[in-house]
Figure (cartoon, rainbow, N blue to C red):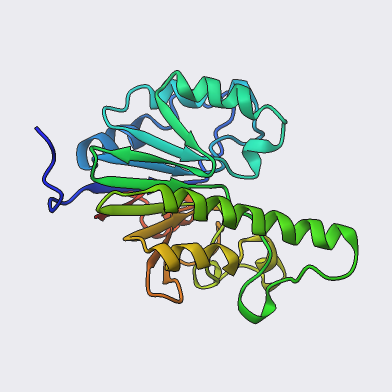
Length: 244
């Protein structure tokens, strides 16, 4: 029986798990709690600490206990070892769907568009592609990620859609971090496709010392779900839970 498109879907989201190879069972209680209250789990990057297949295998041991779909994007830590394909393969054994400019559809009702994202700064302080080659390359990476998100959102035809990122699309959820780090925590370029296509909610991680909530310029709610931040603000529930 198809889900009523007007019924609420309980979306749990967290990020920055930073799982290490020797941390067997670290997330068992987390998974147990998610199973009890959510319909789908989104993991917003930095799933592993160094991006090794061994770390991903350890995490997959716990994720294999999930009774609901799990969708993920990579973070910068997941790319450190240059083994992203192997990490994906290990997570796939636990039925984790890793997105990178594509989308996942839950019961023909909820579309999830996911990318890693990138830095570049926010608002009037957004870095521009001018001057040295490395600066232009840095800016172009953020532009490329924004275009990937635009493509993913443009393909969705579901009545409900959410966006998951690692990097932030707004400065508000990074407030609390050292100001010098802001250009490396996200970029406003990621907010443009979100506001153009629309979304019910956006989740991101990466900013461990940021703030919990904000909105895009177009008014889309944004949640910072970095687990180190949630551990301080809501230690009893280290994930955001939003009905969509």
